[in-house]
Structure formats: C-alpha cells, structure tokens
Length: 631
Image 1 (tube, rainbow, N blue to C red):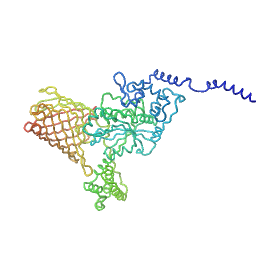
Image 2: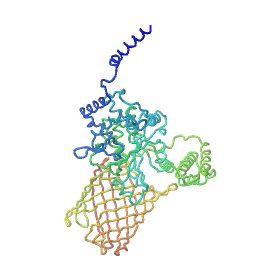
Image 3: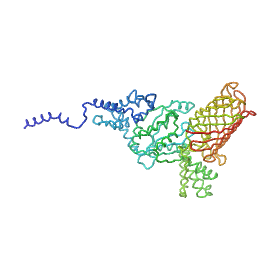
C-alpha cells in the first residue's frame, strides 16, 4: 500500500512540468523578456508620437522636436522626459513593473491616465505586474464620482490684479442633485504677495502654477459671494468615461508645478490639456502664437462643438444691484438701515407689500454679503439676519420672482486682440494711423460681454504717417488700465487708473515729442440714468524725454468724464482733463475728448473722435475716424 502511494507521487512529480506548461499564462519565461517585448513594440508602433501621449505630457512643438510645458522634474520618469517623449514612454513602461515601490508611491498609482492608456494600447498582462493598492487615488475617485463636466468662467474683478482678465476652471459633476456638491479643477499661481513686482513676475514666468481639486462650493463662495463676480457655466457633452479620464490626468498633476505666464501658459490654457485628456480628438491647445485670455479659451471650447448648455449664476452683488434698481431711493435707504440696525417695521409700514418684499430681500442679500466680507460680527449678523427673515416670512412669495436678466455672455463679446485703421485731420494736416492691440478691452469698445467701466490694454502699438513728419511711432501703451466702479448705498469702491508707456506729449505747439509717461489716478464713479457712468479722478503725470529742460516734467491734475452705452450698437465717451506741471519745468495743459463708437457686428466697430487740447493759447484740434477689427 505504501509502495503504491510512493509510486503515484513519483509519477505526479514527474508530470508537474508538463502540467505547468499546459496551464494558461505568459508565453515568455522571464519578466525582463516580457518588458523588453513591450518596449520594442511601443517603439515599433511609435507610441511616443501619438498625440494623446503628447497631451499627457503637456508637450508643445519646440524647433524640430517637443518640449513639455510642465517644469517640475517629478512629473517625468526619464531624466530627459521633458524634451524626449520616446525616453519618457520607455521609462514609464519600465516603472509599471517596479516592485521596490508600493502603495501610492508606485508609478501606476501616480500616473493612472498613463497606465490606462498604455494598458489599452499594448494589452498589458496583469500577471506580470506587481500587485499595488492605490488607496489615496481610490479615495479621491470615490469621493468625486465623475459623471459629467462643465467649464466655468467667473467674470473679471478689477480690484484684484490676478482677476482682471477673468478666470476659468472645470467643474466635475457627480451623481449629486446640487452642483454645489461637485468638485472643481483649477490651475493658478499662488504669489506670496502682490506688489509692484507682481506684473513683471507674472509676465515673465517667475510664479509657479499648480493644479488643484476643491469643492465647487468653495469657488462659488469666493467668486460669487465675496468678489462680486458673475459665473457662467458651460456644460460639456463629455461621457462619464471621458470625465473619469480627465480626473485621472488631473491626479497625475497633483502637487506638480509649471511656470505661470499671464498671457499664454495661464489658468485658461493649461486647463485645455485636461479637456484633451478627456477626449483625445480635440485640438484645443493648438493656438499658435496667440496670447491666451480666459474668455478666448471659452470661445475655443465652444467652437470645438463640445458645449451643450450654458447657465448664468449672478453674483450676490449683482442680485443686490438688481433688487436696488427696482426700488425707489427712499426704499433703498430703508433696506440699508436694515443692514445696519435690523428691520424697521414703522418705515416699511408705508410701503406697498411688493416693495416691502424687495426691501427685505435686499436686506437679506446685503447682510449675507457684509458678513462674507467680514464687515460685521457674527452676533450682529445672526440677530439682524434672523429678524429680517422673520419679517420676510410674513409676506409670502411674490407673484413673479425678481430674477436677474442674464447680460451678454462673455463669448459673445468682441475678441481680445484688435487691428485699427484711422484717418483724420489735425490743425489742418491730414494723417493716417494703424495700430495693433494684443489685449484686451478699451473704454471705447462696445461693452457687450465685458465689465462696464473697465479697461485693460497691453502693448497697444500705433504707427502714424503724415506729410510733415512722415512715418513715426505715435504711441506704445505698455499698460493702460482703468477701473470705474460705481458707488451706491451698498458698495463704495474706489476707481483708479494706471497708464505707462511711450506717448506724444501735447504741450508743445508745433511738435509732439515722444516721451515715456507714467500716469496713475484715483477717484470716484457713480451710475446715473441720464449721464450713464460718470467719474472724477485725481491724477499724477510724469514724463521723461530729451525735449524737456531737465529731461522730465511732472504734475498733478483732475480728469472727469462720462460714459454711456446709449443703445446696443452706440456708445459715447466724453472726458476732460487739466494738469499743472511744477516738477522739472512749469507748464499747464488741458484737453477735451468726445468719442462715439458704433458696433457693426461682434468683432467689427467704428468710432468718430473729436479732441482738443494743449497749453493755453497753443491748443490743437483733431478729428479722427477709426475702423476696428477684433480677432
């Protein structure tokens, strides 16, 4: 009996190699051989030239090759991966088979989008791969539960330099009924402080930009509730698989930096790589030489055909201004008193029920606004807020809700770059001008799609030809920013301007020397039914050039004006300025300007301007007609 058992065991041991040979599994005997076969196949199939691989690396053409826009060395598994996509794909494939790293540190956990793509393209066999558990990534994907996505555009906010052009972010929606429970993907620079060096550092890439994932509610609270920024939500027609792919690539960029540039590699442009990671057929980042303004990316995304719906989320300040516009001045004062002291039953008793509702609604919105801005203590806020809600609850619902009418959406405004051709007459002599402006919006441009009273001009260059002086540089506006923010009972912002660049000084009778100008100003603006947006600014003016006795001249003065969008296609801008110069040499100048702009289409408009000014008794008059083409 024992001999029979021993004999059967010998036969089983003898047959084991044949049984293992017949069992299913990899055809190669060693892991190194399997990895080598994968590397050879990736090279043969030129996977490193695949557009999706370039998207995952954020590659852009650079000479005869490629260069990643990501500057953090931790993003690359090959020392030459920033410029060599072939070396990076080889290093990535090798890293997937590493067994010395475990958990979230393993490359398969760090780069889930790369792994998913290469696994599908090369049919990676799990039997050769080490077992890893990506706990942190699984926790994030379980919380986000991506199903759909939307591109979000918070409008510009002139009181913060980083927000003057607006912003873009991506909302990643899960199965939740409220969008406020969604998550938002954001790319931004985080400067330590915003000072005089802020524009220089931002233009030349001295800040680091990072991708991040935050609850969408946090962005709504910041932009809509405290920064007075309306938000436009462009829903994309992405499937849940595409949004998951986008989220996987976003995870790969966690804590990875890229050098941040205001005009190209910024909050808008880098987000386009996430959209391309979701849908590889998109070509959103092929923008060439153009500067990338946030609203430009909105247009690019819409023109790609992936936007299926658009929603408008007015800021709390917008809702407040809308409610105030429906009330008399006396009723507005009662609402303002409600913010400062709580509801005044006696004052509201004289109001009609509908007006009383609006007064209380306005007080509720205003109380929430001042509390979010930390202008009121929590105790005072709760006392007044609950008292106001109690009074409001007694009145029921209005017959028709006081909803804010959406303004022109940002993508429907003029494009941010502009060519201009002008012809005119100055003191009896004709002249012709051509100018180009890379960015962005001027007070004389149509307001549709832009924040009224705002101006942001960078690098506007004007060449002029006339029979007396021939061809010459008329102006180079390096920076020309104006923010005219109207004040009312609830908002008391300061208006300001700052202009610097090369300009023609008009203080000489027969010649206008080219000088370098620095022209800041600060003041107040108001909104009226007849005058439109009217303002007054105290300003300083400092000019440098060889035409002056001491190579410079400086003074102070006042500028006043009014801007009115008369109709959708007609805008009027009137301004007057007087300056007294006591620095360098003594002089006085004054000027007056009247500009009418006529909108022909979204990107075509014309203007007629009449100006007059100079030193007393040495004034010059000018009439100019201009055709503007935005692109």
